[in-house]
Length: 362
Image (cartoon, rainbow, N blue to C red):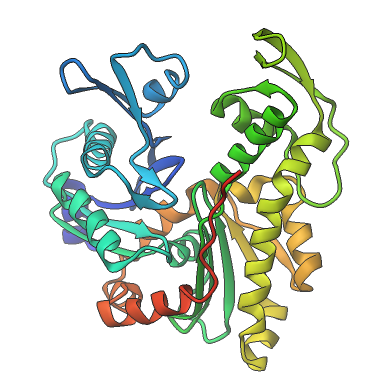
C-alpha cells in the first residue's frame, strides 16, 4: 500500500459489510473484523425512538415489555424494514470507527443471489443513507469466496457454498466471473424454526433463542455425533406451565434434516448443469463452505459424500462475507469485474427463478 493510499484509508476507511439475516459484520481493510452483532433493532413504541440494537436488542427477545418492539430488518436475506436496516448499519459502522477521526468510509455490501434489482437498490440506499461516501454491492457468494481466500481470478473453476442465516448461496466461479449462481431461502433461521416447530408438535414450546442454542449444541448433518441430551426451559403445553425438558440430538437432527436436504438438492442441481470441463476442475479445487451453517457438525462430509466432490470449511466461516467485501474494494479492477451490473444481474436472477427459490412453512 502506498503512503497516499495508507493515509486515505486512515481517514476514509474501506469497509466490507455483511448485512445478514442473523448477524451484521463490519470489516475494515487493514484492521480486520471491527464488529459482529445480531441484526436486531428494538424500538420504544411510545416515543418511536431506537431503544437498543445488536446484542442488547437480541437479549430482550421473548422478554421485552409491550412498549418495546423488536425488529429484524433483514428477512431471508433481503431488507424488510428500511428504517431499521439504515439505523443498524449507521450505528454499527459509527461504533466500529468511533475510536478515530475520519471521513465517510467507502463501503461494499453483500447481497444474496435471490434479491431482485429493487431489493439490491434498497440495500445500496440503506448503506448510503447511513453515511457512506461511496457504496456498491457484490454477490454474497462472491464476497464469501474472496473472504475464504479463494483466488477468484484463477482460470480453474471453484465452488463456494455460503450457508447463512436466511439464505444459502451457491456459486461456481472462474476467471473473476460467475459461471453458475443459485440462491435458496434456506439457512440457519429456517432450521431454528423447524426445531421450534418439532418441539411444539411434542407439546413443548420454546423461544427462537433456545431453538438456536439447540441447533448449535446438538445440530448435525449425516451421522449423529453422539451428544448427550440437553435440558432446556420452556412451556409445557399440556400442563400449561413452565417446565424443563431434556431434548435429544435425534430430535434436533430430525428437525434440521429437511433444511439440510434442500441445501444438498440445490448443490447437486448446480453441479448437474455444469459443463464437463468445470466438473473436472471442481474435483481438484473442491467445494468451500462458509457462513454460520458451515459449523453444523458433519455438514462438510455430508456434502462431500452426496456430491463426490472434496468439501472443506473455510477459516472463520462466519466472517468470510464481510472480509471478502472489504478486500474487493482494494482492487478496483476486481470490483468492476465482480460488481453485478443491472443487465448481468437480471440474467442471474432469471436463472435463479427456475425452481431454485424455496421457503419454509411448518
